[in-house]
Length: 146
Image (cartoon, rainbow, N blue to C red; front, side, top):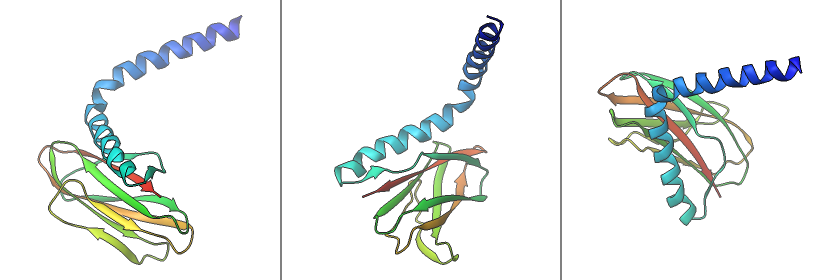
């Protein structure tokens, strides 16, 4: 009985914490929705989302790396998206040896990099927040494969 009361108390605390944190995630949720909508377009071309959407936040002109495991022979399209305070997001894809595989540095906020790996392994995606008007800007990376 005591254990059940503790579990219910912990669960109640989790619900309160989640509800309080939800408004702070508005921009992240926006990015997730954009990538899910893009996923529908990829599905029309035979792709499916193969990984969880990765999200983060960056200030203007800053970058970070996202690591993903990609499988041999699968055709991948990795798409980035950023919130409405961002007007330019860039991505560069590197293989396990650090060689550049694909890059999208066009002046847009939906970069797409592609690869069909010749071996299964870790790939790194360099995400660059090229233009953010209200820091930090949220971004996401969706991985689609077929």
